[in-house]
Length: 289
Image 1 (cartoon, helix red, strand yellow):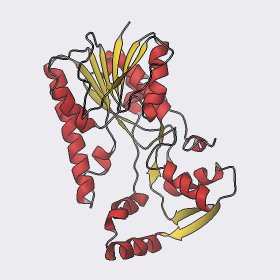
Image 2 (cartoon, one colour; image 1 turned 180 degrees about the vertical axis):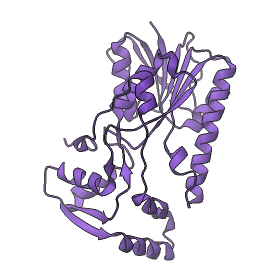
Image 3 (cartoon, one colour; image 1 turned 90 degrees about the vertical axis):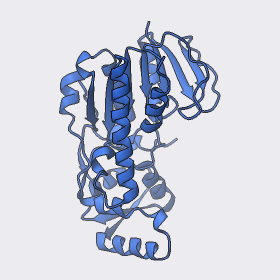
Image 4 (cartoon, one colour; image 1 turned 45 degrees about the horizontal axis):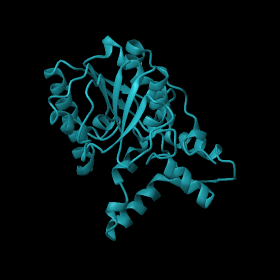
């Protein structure tokens, strides 16, 4: 029976990962910022803490470390616990490492550089301790209504009964379901081929951004009116908001990326550990009660 230590276990991917690990008869130590009661399964134990205020005393005999939270914080935590031994460490990063590295926005460039540095730090620290590591770089994650990219769009559409559709927003997107990321983590645990590698992992379908919005609109139970908006008009609105001091509320770089492809090549993940993500399921972005 392998013992897993999971950071970010209460997040979207953790929601799908925990039952998959328990189904393997694994012992799971799940870390949460808020106290949680142990589930009915005797194999699952919740620990209170996070990567910034980590658990004071970790149980011995941890076989696999999984990080689903901020990578830079995890790299710092991992480096600060040199006595912790495991046979495998698997972490999520982000495709932002690639897509935002040359952004016009200094904050986005800094984020990409920070993630890139964190990946290198983690790989070096793990290799120095002879721990096999794997880094997964997902695209847009969705699946339980808590993401900060697609779910807010659906909330806006449900509240106002309209869906703004930027005309000409033809940049490709490849949303990945959190359940497919959970499957990828499980597949990497015992995959020797995946050791020491970084994989881009996207969803099973590539959609133009405007088509993605149309799919989200069509998935709503109540009528949502499409509202075509020219891109140049959006640029004017952004410019006006920035002129009156609201630059922090609008990401102009994100607007420029509406015509840029933000996708992942899944071929290496498919070849090495059988990654087979589902096509985009619009109704899963923000499930209706």
